[in-house]
Length: 307
Image (tube, rainbow, N blue to C red):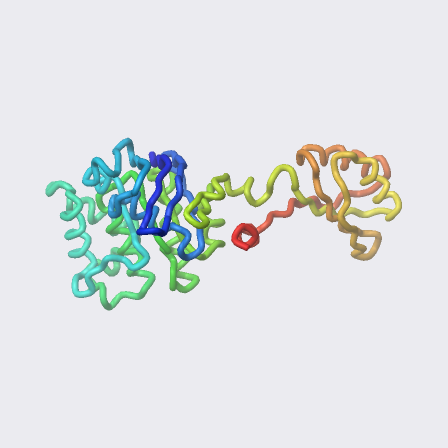
């Protein structure tokens, strides 16, 4: 659906993008992260055909972005950080105007506007002037204009920036509804937002893609999974059970009271090897109360990459 092949962009002596390559399949929601100045906005503008690349190629829905920009515009819905709204227009009139700009057929404009009003939960404010809306509603209007022409790809730049918690939940719910139907790229500084929405993450640093990974695997790499195990038994037997399990090593053990201990363990191979540990617990008469896998946060991983 989206293909970037060795995209580069220079502004004079400054190289904003350096041979950026990746592919995004149809129906994916991908989190796109990077510090200010890393190249996020430059890449999004190239993909949306608003900015030419210096070298390399980009394709959206099979269309070459540099050769067929008008065709690409029809396939993409774009919500920039500041939504392109007209404050003196009503919501419905603005969306009708957006549909016209995006070449929605005259026969289909009314139906499409009604559809996005419903999909973005804007029916109650459709006749209200945009300038009088809350920021949350304005963001929904911005998303509505981005999808009014039924694009195959949606690119959202900071879609929940400045919203209160309730508004964030509403916008997040709306983005989730787009999954599978459309390919979505979400760029945001709110890293927890990506954890809630995306299954894949792209991280750009100094113009280069440094991470392109399934989010779950990125946060919990197979070669260093960490597990917390809560057990009940004698400390000596607990330690012996861990020593007898070759596939894991103990980090620490904490006494919680009443013969209950919590072990922080690290796996050196595969999480399936914890079956061996449980068998050893049973052998030593230790009761397993709880096993939970530790999941790192995207914030921790992002800070580590951008030290």
